[in-house]
Image 1 (cartoon, rainbow, N blue to C red):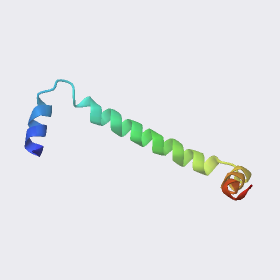
Image 2 (cartoon, one colour):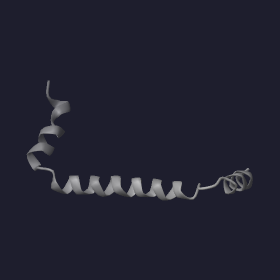
Image 3 (cartoon, rainbow, N blue to C red):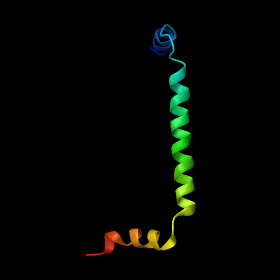
Length: 55
C-alpha cells in the first residue's frame, strides 16, 4: 500500500515543496510559541490560570 502511494506521489510535479512548507510552518509556530512563553508577563499568566476557578 505504501509503495503504491509513494509511486503515485512521485508522478506529481512540484510535490516536493509541500513537506518543506509544512516543516517551515511547524517550526515557525513553535518558535513563536516558545518566544511568547518566555516573554509573557507573570501577572497575565497567573490571571489566566485562575480563570477556571473564578465564578
